[in-house]
Image (cartoon, rainbow, N blue to C red):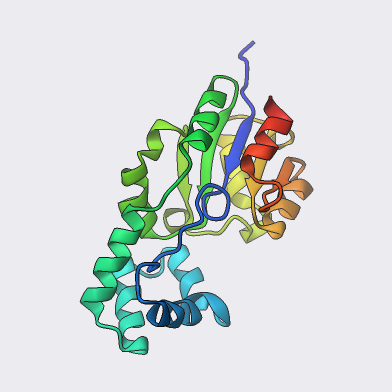
Length: 200
């Protein structure tokens, strides 16, 4: 009988990486971008993460609404995406679990992640698969965790044998309701903490 490996689903932002896009802008301009996209009304960024806008289109909208020159915004945005930092220890720890688990990076993210961040970090060397909401067309919380069911079926693994590591309480709640094991990643209980507790 084939030995089915359980799946580990691991988030990116807030779990593996804590760097922001446009972080190299002067603080007052960075604040304008954060306010526009990530604070009160997140509709635009959520639609971007579902593949409705490209990075170029978003940067043009941001330029128009903030008065920051598009070329400046774009160049800083691309460079910041390419230079996001992830702990080598974390990546190696996840990579070493691949003997016993299928390890999938499951990120709610934008085209820029796949175009700039993923290649710069060579994430394909550490994960069995990288799932980006931009290309999936859905978020992890859409349709009661449809994305998790999709990959559990694809790899023929019961969801009760799967784990998720995420900094979103909503994602963890949905995953638990599906029957899997969810670990909420926080500053106090980070990814290394959870991995050591579960897989040491």
